[in-house]
Length: 366
Ligand SMILES: [Zn+2]
Image (cartoon, rainbow, N blue to C red):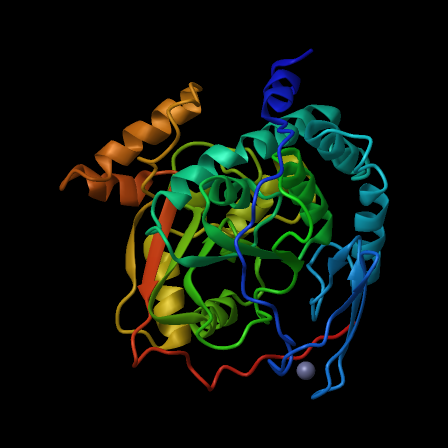
């Protein structure tokens, strides 16, 4: 048995854990209340106001309005359904491996690295959770394989997750069910640019490694501002362009110091023609947020990892906790902001920055 399998086995719980009541989703198109009929995990939903229809996907209520850049909505649904067929017979590790086996362009070596990354994502999730005050409702946009969701639910927090990839949510569901959480889980396939909740629903919104994957991150930030309550915060983590270590998406050093056109040539030479998201600094993301949402104030800093769980003894965890301590030191915190691996932006919703109404969202339905 490998270390990953051992770690995985020790996490499986036999008790049923309680999930707090979470806000019900509405129509992502017109924000009307949906009449959801659940029938043996199948969904049949019509919006009585705008007429949009929503169906089930791999046991989830699918509230997406468009697909991600990798797969069409139909292809994505099929992949999630195929993965879900293995859900009962596989562990979290096994299911994650199955996923990468279905993904042709991932080599066996990269596959194991990605599997390890998925297994360890709860630690990073716990560090992010540590940044959010207790006793508040949280929405995670881009909840992926559920690392943050798992940490939050284990801590008894009221958390809801959305992701554009229902295939990832199948993995997230496996993770949560291994921990003893049961249906219905508060996770939904939905788009960051069209969140299925009314205005002022959540106390906090978080997103980790999301913005860099979006075609129009400004619209997603505006949506987060819309669904968060006045006085609530939006906390966003994203890989830092100027981190001198390897780029998390392409695994190469120094990519962020090149102009985009040179970086593209370099990545194509080393990795072939692959799509990879462009990282920005925390300051860069703060600028995107303030310009696209007309905000006067966006705080930015290096991500504060000081809440990284002590039970993670890896080198990565030690570096993360050290960076966490440095980020609280007056002068060194600037270095962490400039060169740390992850940047953080924080927006507090005030009465004046509720959300800009002039951001017209392009409609994409497939
Ligand atoms: Zn509607």
